[in-house]
Length: 148
Image 1: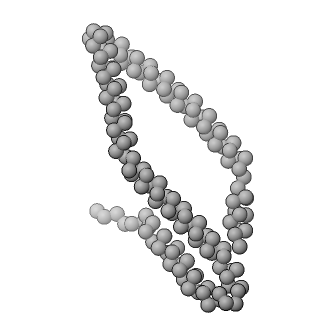
Image 2 (image 1 turned 120 degrees about the vertical axis):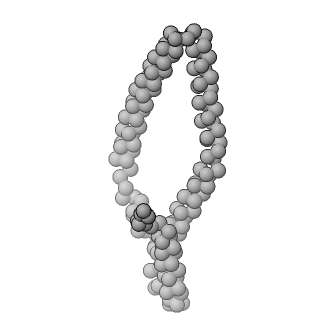
Image 3 (image 1 turned 180 degrees about the vertical axis):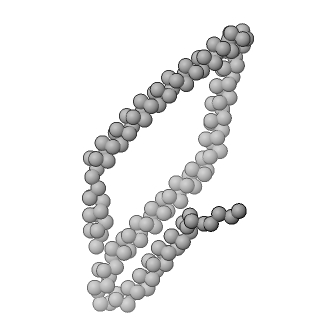
């Protein structure tokens, strides 16, 4: 009944996926460290330039206030985007649940078709499943023509 789903899930090679993910994490971590070092040197160069043209105290105040303002902007943007992120998580969870329910319904249909008393319910269930698939895919048409 659910064996096609289990077979699909077990056919994935988890060790290869873990190796690829580990390699990607290592490469991106090294790139991030290099980028942070580069950004640090650029900030230091900007500070030295500012300190040479102004006094060192003014340069420290300007850079300190600039970084505090940057931190405040980051926190405010994160707080303002919170409801949108939670709404997206709920929508994604609903899509996954719908897909799982559809897969289970399709895998259960042959079992229901074999039973004599339930045979009259097969076509309405199949129609409902087909409508659910149509409804799910109808809104995701990304090939809309451009309007000039």
